Image 1 (cartoon, helix red, strand yellow):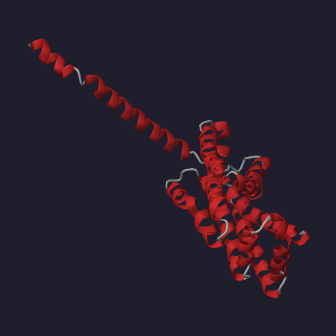
Image 2 (image 1 turned 180 degrees about the vertical axis):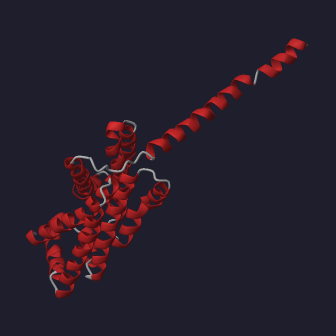
Image 3 (image 1 turned 30 degrees about the vertical axis):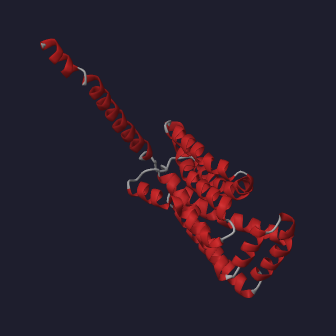
Length: 259
């Protein structure tokens, strides 16, 4: 009887130990994640000139990728494009787990939010420009939450710079009344886009359109260049994302002129 009683008390010991062990592992994983995200380093004064501009160039490249690569991919494979966000997040944390590649993983994590937003919008909502900015802001709560805790500064400031450039471009479209052309382009076959682009270009070339184009360019230049005075990696990422908006908008203008 005594043996039976003892056995009844010792039986639950294993699952309790397992639960405690799982809890400890979970808490350790959270601490490791917080430690990884909080390693967002500032760019020291002694950092080589080449390194500072690599951050800027990488930010410009990552802003251009969703525009010129993701948009065509999303049209034919929207679900696959959304699923690729998981790969970008996994790759970013893999890179962030190594000190030598932490910076690029941090930057890639911010890019993941831009990629996810682009996949959702261009995959299912591209016909309505009013949804563009709200969808692009999908990562804003996460970015703000991380920055309050000083986590992932490079990637999150890159995302904010990209979002700011998108917001200013959309404001220009509203002010110059280009939204109707946006809707038309999304509803016709590629072969029929040229006349619509020509009409939109006429709208841009009016005094009203040119004035606001200059204002937009000046704002982007100011917001993009001033942070570069702070020799910190996250400001280079932010500035590169903002300045790349001018590049992307200029390429679209060239394409419309050549259509």
